[in-house]
Image (cartoon, rainbow, N blue to C red; front, side):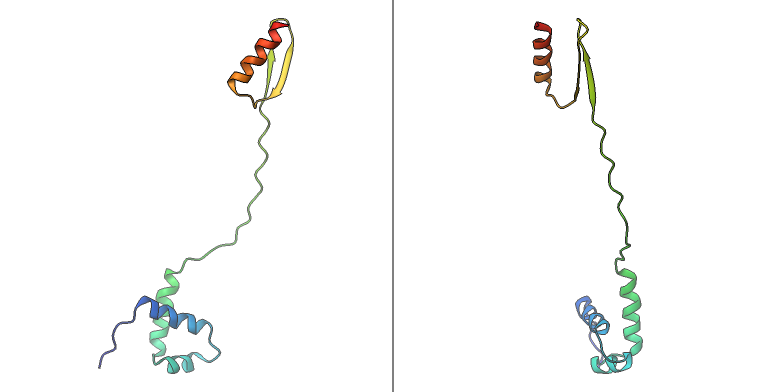
Length: 100
């Protein structure tokens, strides 16, 4: 009588059990009722499909340089600041400084 084809879940359970075994490969196959060649086939077939991860070392991102701008007014005054203004705030600053 032919054995029905094993599902991927059944094969995965066999492989997980093999990895966690405390007996020899031959004894494990005998306990599970499969041949060693079948287990070896599953191991080759599923290890090729397994995603492998590599250890990487991430370098820290260098800090972004502060965007600095200099605003030189008609009267020679100079305003330097990091650029974190909204357009309306910058326009207001210019009006205030030029109004003096």
